[in-house]
Length: 146
Image (cartoon, rainbow, N blue to C red; front, side):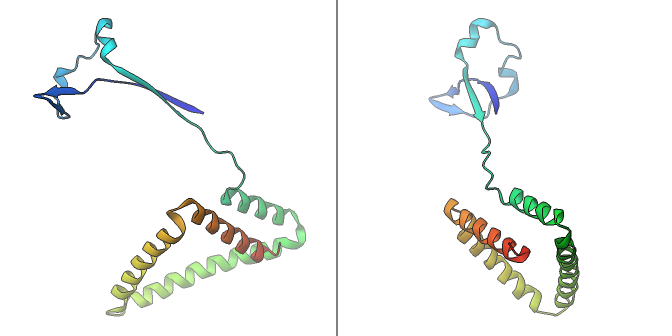
């Protein structure tokens, strides 16, 4: 748990309005003790959620469990090699498509629209994020055969 204590100056009034543009010379660097009562103090506390439903933690535990079994190591190495080959192939494909005249602009527009849809569909609301985590966990367990 982390906590932060802050002491704020009261808002300054200039002709009945709050002023946010105040020069630094108007604030004393070390105010006397009798002026401290005009300050507002508050405490902010943050606590972490220690649930084990984190996707990253689950994936790492799953990979570690598969790695501990000698008969599954070859499959895990093959999966890692396939991921590297897929990244290399997609980079080469993107480079080839990027050289075509109009296609990069159209694909960029499609990518922006898909990103907006994906953010709205899966990332904006908590139940949708939980659904995405369930889909990802199911896909990982299907790939690893669990």
